Every structure is written in C-alpha cells, then in structure tokens.
Image (cartoon, rainbow, N blue to C red; front, side, top):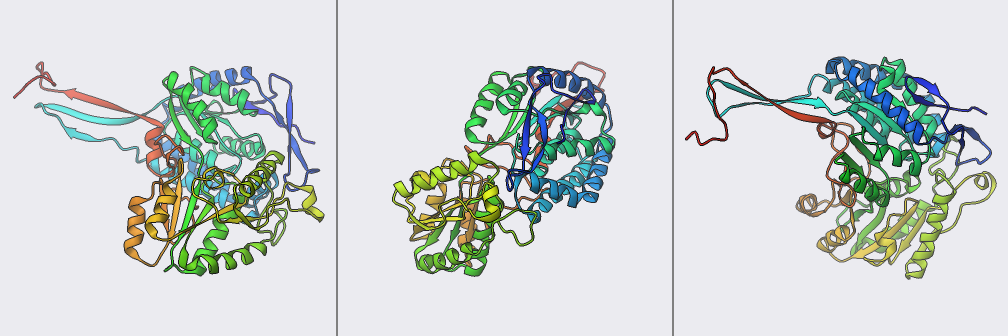
Amino acid sequence: MTTFQNFIGGRWVAPSTGEYFENRNPAQHTDLIGRFPASGVADVEAAVASAVRGFARWKATPAPARGDVLRRVGDLLAARKEELADLMTREMGKPLAETRGDVQEGIDTAYYAATEGRRLFGHTVPSELANKWAMTMRRPIGVCGLITPFNFPLAIPTWKAFPALLCGNAVILKPAEDVPHTATVLVEILLEAGLPPEVIQLVHGMGEVVGKALVEHPDVPVISFTGSTETGRLVGETCGRMHKRLSLEMGGKNAQIVLDDADLDLALDGVLWGAFGTTGQRCTATSRLILQDGIHDAFIERLVARAAQLRLGDGRAAGTDVGPLVNAAAREKVEQYVAVGLAEGAVLRLGGARAVGGALDQGHFFQPTIFTGVAPGSRLEQEEIFGPVLSVVRVRTAEEAFTVNNGVRYGLSSSVYTRDVNVAFRALQQLDNGITYVNAPTIGAEAHLPFGGVKQTGNGHREGGWEVYEFYSETKVGYVDYSGALQRAQIDNY
C-alpha cells in the first residue's frame, strides 16, 4: 500500500496530524489505491506561508513566460493521457471514454491558457484632458484557494489552476477526498513542466477542516469553489465577511426539453448521455426530461428500452456504459430519492434499486432509473440528486416547457430539441440558465467558452473562456500627465 503526501513549501511532506484516509476504487471495494493525508489547520498555515513566497516570485515572471510553463504542462498531459484516464477511472469510476475526455479538457485548457499569456489585454482610452494618457492593465491578486469536486478530477482543477497561474497568482489546491491521486499527479506534472515549487501547494484532507481553514485564512484573498449549493452558501458567507474575491460553481437541476417536432432519434441519444453519463454525477447532468404531449408516450417507451440495455460495470472494462457511484453515501442518497419519488406518486418505469450480482456486488452501483408522471414543484423535480435518476415531466406547449425549466432554484444548463428555428431562438432568450443547447444534451463544456450558471448555481463568475482571466486578475488604471501643469479631472472643465 502506498502512502501519499502533501506538497507544501516546495517539498512532499507528511501531514502535521500524522493521520491518513484511504482511497478505494468505487467499482471494487478491495482495491486500495493508497493512503492520503488527513491534514489539519497547521498544514494550511504552512501552505499559505509558502504560497505567499511563491507569489512574490511568480508575479514578477512575464506572463508569456508563465504561458510557456503551461504549454509544457499541456504537452505532458497529452503524453500521459491514457495513464491519467486509467487512474481517474480507478479512483472515481466513470468509464475510460469519459476520463479520456477529462484529460483532454485539461490539455485544451493548458494550451488555451498558454496563448492568453500574450493576451492579458488592457485598454487605452482618450483622456478628457489634453496631454494626458489613460490606460488599464491586468495584475495578479495573490494566493488563490481552489476547492474542487470529485466528478472531473483533472478537468476542474485545471479550469481553476491554469488561469490563476497564468495571471501570476500562487495556488493552493484542495481536491475532493474521493480523488486525491489525480490531484497528486497533476501537481507532479506542473512541477515537471517548470513551475516554481512554492507557486503550487497541495493540501489533502476533509472539507470541513482543510477547506474551511483555506476559506477562512486572511492571506488567501481569492477562493474558487465547486460543490454543493449548501456548502457554497457557507463559503460565500465567510468570503463576504472577509472581503474575498469568490467564484462559486454549485448545483444544477438541468432539463432537456423535447418538442413534438424534434428529431427523436437525436433527442434519445442526447438524454441517455445527459442523464446516465458519469452515472448522473455532473452538475450539468440531465436530471429532468420535459416532453411535449404529442411524443411523450412513444418517446418514453423507446427511452426505457434503451436505458435498460446500458451496461454497468468497472469503467476500465471494455463495453461498460455506466460506472459506479463514487461512494456508499452517494448511493444511499440516490436510494432515498427513489423513496421520495414513490411517496410523491411518481411512476417508476425503470430501475430504482442497487445493481447487484457478480462483480457489481464489489462496488457502489445503482440501476439507471426513470420516473414518469413527475409533478412540477415536487421534490423529485426540484432537488439535485447527483445520481442516475431521470424525472420526466409532461407538458402541452413550448411555453409551458420553458416555465417548467425555469421553475427551479438552479440555473446551470438547459437543452431544447426542435426543428423550429423560431422556438430555438426563443429558448435561448427565455430559459433561465447560464448555458442553453439547441439539439444537444445539457452537458459538454468547451475550454474556450465561459462556463457557469445563474440563480443558486453560481454567483455570477464564469470558469473557462476569456472571462475567467478577469476573475483571477485585478484591473489597474494608469494615468500619465505630460502637460507640465496641474490638470484636474472630475472638476467642471466645461
């Protein structure tokens, strides 16, 4: 059994607590990946002190040179793509086809960040006064605390870390307890690419200890958090009180709308991938399916038949469509929501129980589950489950579908399948989501576009694309008055 360490102060070190937690394969309980540090507050203190030193050096490095480091990171990720995909699947369960995509997102993000090293644009604008120059520039902020989830073990840490580093900040990464191995290898790759050691810190441990200490530390002015809305609310309260810059990417209850004129074959493929890919463990998962009357019954029959054929198993085995849930608590939560749905009168059309038998007994597997007759406003329709449970709502019109889509507290992703271009553009305008897909499922972020949601999904910031570089940098305004005389702006010069 391998015992792993934190990376603090430019060295791999044991936790101050002397305590460790086990990391096991969710598809096979007996497969122990290793022991990882159950760190304490003292480890966070040491990491922050080191990151402050690293920031002083890194911020003085020209942005194009910072980009060169990230370009090398992209090259290393590409060279190790299969290895990384395998270790991620072993650690969190989703099939290799998905973890390869996870690595590719990291590669794309690295190369995109590298080019932004030559594009941290400011503005030059005319002054209202003669013989005066006015401009803006982007400057780094300081130490960034990054708290990341289990479901995209490589992609999400890279979404956060690479822009933060490119902008000249130092980073402290606190990964989810379920995927510490991937984070460890990512830090190894950053160091191999030439990142100065004190610019990156890795602190493993429990969110209520390490994450809390990171959020509360006065020398960490930037926090980026991806996780549940409930935890995000607590993070937001602390950051607001301490005047920190904060990016929240939280829950979702995403809907795919299928209208009577849709390409039903395309819509069927979309909902199967959206609802049951990553075993439903995505903030962008299709957890609601809104069907118009005319196609409802026929579509459900086809959907149930196709979903029943999905093959469950170890994500590293050939032919696996759906892997396990990440841990026992996740599976118990899904079971509880199945009971909620039955109590609310929804009709269970498929699944609804643990998947057992043979090798499935060794992991946290759950059958793909479909409920029909789900009422708008019910708990099953409103609450994030984070598992392979699809709730189907019947509607009469496109307008009713839009209303149902908008009737939840979340607003991450949405999808509409229609051949009517007018309806498609109305959906883009009327659906209260940060992302809307037309004739595609609710998932599938691209590295060069902003990602995030509205309402209780986020707090207005975006990950990915060009906008994230504004989050990780400050705008500074510079004036140069070369008139040789006192000139007073904001005085009535007219």
